Length: 306
Image (cartoon, rainbow, N blue to C red):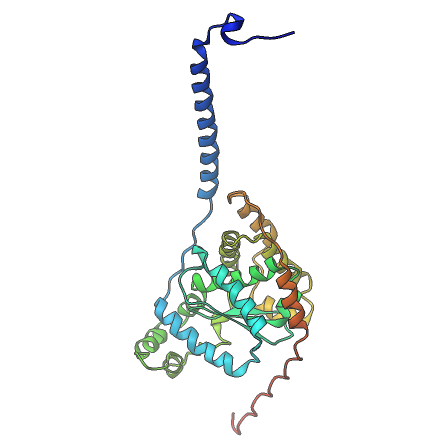
């Protein structure tokens, strides 16, 4: 049995162009609706901006470089071309996100058995070897780095410093003219902003912002943003361990990080995320094989009368 359509079936073809045109219009409308839904979701993502600050961005960089020199002299920095190259490459990839800002980031590894990471104003980022070992996949390590980069991009360190002793701080910054040490000028007015100061102690609001911005850096870079929150939640469950205490002290939990990041991801365009790589596990094995970190130097004895 044969079925005929169009003229052979006795049905005129004159209506077919209108049908085709209608179908095209329908496809365009469906595409526009999908685009509008995606745009509406993206519109609900927040664009975070740095808070009030007495420092200029250039002063952030100068302060960070001077504090970095302290870290380089006092901490056991890892000098392994394979580990250094991997961390620098991962950091550079994350820094390509517009959410990372425009500060000149550097990335170094400290041989330390405590799980921690920190960033100084203006770009220096440090990751402890124990953090690399504790991460379950590359996305979690990338999440730690993206979180620290967000503290830099949002200028949390100098924002926190600006909130206290503003009068002395203004005087110290005025004294830090070109060619002079900023740390020295601030110290002369009684303000310590070295590597172990308020620069590394953040509020819960700052932590929440670094999670939010870090998740967007990860998404821009192709990593699953939820893995960052899962890593922090994992550390929270082991809060009684001494090697994690400092990280949790410097990074107070803002609440249910996994839930907050999952909600944020729901507003992002749908995409396939990367979680892991063989190179991460090769580097992790190299880190595990590093010699034990040196014992910390004893604190200098107090002088008589102190």
